[in-house]
Image 1 (cartoon, one colour):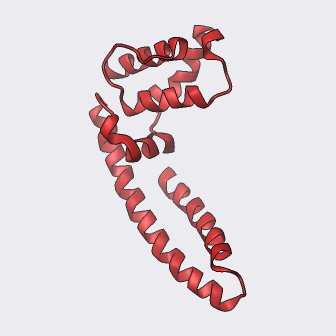
Image 2 (cartoon, helix red, strand yellow):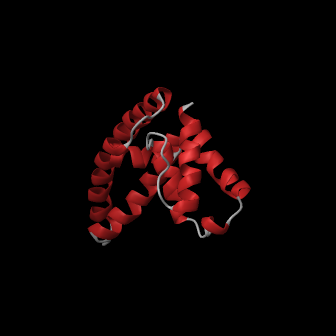
Length: 143
């Protein structure tokens, strides 16, 4: 039932740019509305079928990196979340914290090693290593 209200609220948001009256907003609703805002479509002029098709994934689909990032940064403003979503987000958050902690310790160690071996500046070394490690993090979170 909760996802039906999230869907209805996001449809209202797509047309009127005000959040719907049905509880929440949950993390799924926040993400759906953010994706609506970030898209290049003028949703107020789109057909309801186009709106429905766009909202199916963020509301009913699997939780994604968008959901996790929003929840980590703004869980204090997420309300009426599905209990199963909260369990999944907590699991992802624990994995994310573990992986990012490992990345930073690995990154600092590698930056020290790289800067000793080459004339590369610390910033260039950090940029290169962080990009590699973020790619590994994304791969780990997707598993």
